[in-house]
Image (tube, rainbow, N blue to C red):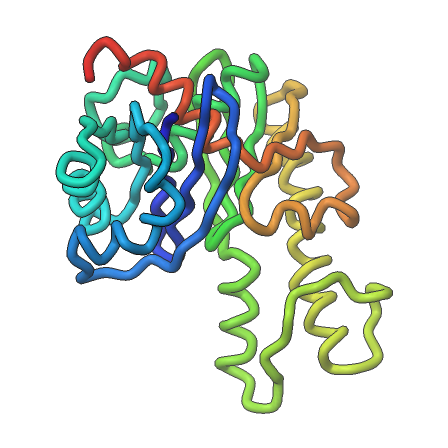
Length: 250
């Protein structure tokens, strides 16, 4: 079995894989200042009966990266593969400083490269990230506020607007406060995506596949106009690809 970790500022996502197939996924709140034992306890019941052969970590939170390294060595008795500068990925990155590219962006790009020659990955998480990947190269990135960030800013800065759940309203033009806000956030994000895809096509002057992933992707699928390939496990699929390229080194 292989454990795959996607560590973000808000959540830690854990996937269990066997023979390059994702079997189960779990989510935990990202908490800092935990000991390796405390963090291990949060998923101990999930892994206690598994024979763990590999552990792969993509993280944008250095404190958690360090703790997961310790867990791998002290509790699971495996050498973890941490996606960082120097890790063999076969992905070329066009950037002023490629070493600053987030591990999550790298993993998603590798996953996309295994699927299509040219693609635009739209990752709907805490932030909305657009990754243009062509010929195993991450050519460019766009980062925009995610839906939860937009909603939090709206309620924090307007005293009379309530906190609401994100779900698609019955129609675009709302007649009550909650549906008006839901429409603004959800249809606003969907319109952003539809428009961004067309703008990017004009800039790169070519067509490409559109891959959508991330925690809020499924919510938006019914109201997107652009044709997309929904890949909820893209980052984990990318981590498995990277593991294959580094097995001889760990």
